Image (cartoon, rainbow, N blue to C red; front, side):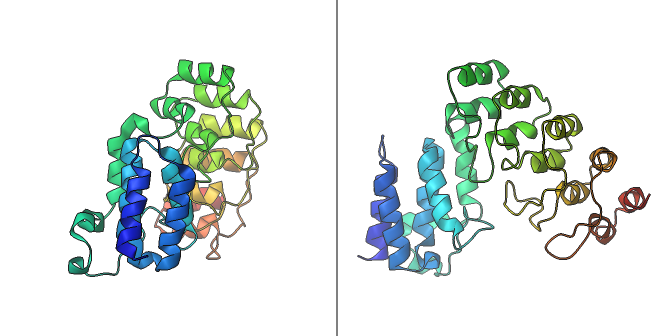
Length: 268
């Protein structure tokens, strides 16, 4: 079946009022298997954008997972190599950068399961209610490995994080310490460490594309220039000799980025 036909079939399957995840997955795999993802990119981008704007989180998550096998660093933005005139007219909007991301923004509060929405809004009472009703604290907020716990760790207040921690979630596989490091949430990091987060854990996944070169929370917080967070990690015994996937320690990363105050802090 031609790429155009399969692409339109994918769009139709994903935009129904109650889309079938199995049908969308089957068509998506057929589309990508039938033609290189680079050629089917416009249709896949459109399908993801539609899912995002309609709040079909399961559809979006599965399409992102399929794409991530070939494009792990940016599964929401598969490349398009066809010339504009070769792309069907109804698909041409998909050539614009961050097309899927912008539609996710339009989806607003529709994206994700109820607990994800409550966390994104910082709605403590709703989080408490949903957890009381049996919501899984280990669920995915976004594409793996961005978990509920990781998203809660990025918030200014640790209140939601504390409610999640009461349910005994899997801290090690949550990427929560990485998100806390990225956003400079010192109090949150202290709570995570007190609950067993591994201070020198290596992060390879992409919770958010900010620092994707591996390493530990210390690398992330150095990259994001979070001095108080660096002090916390050092006070808690973080190792400074661990290298990221480019062979750089946190101190070498600070020097490379011209952050002399962090270089001195890491040298002391």
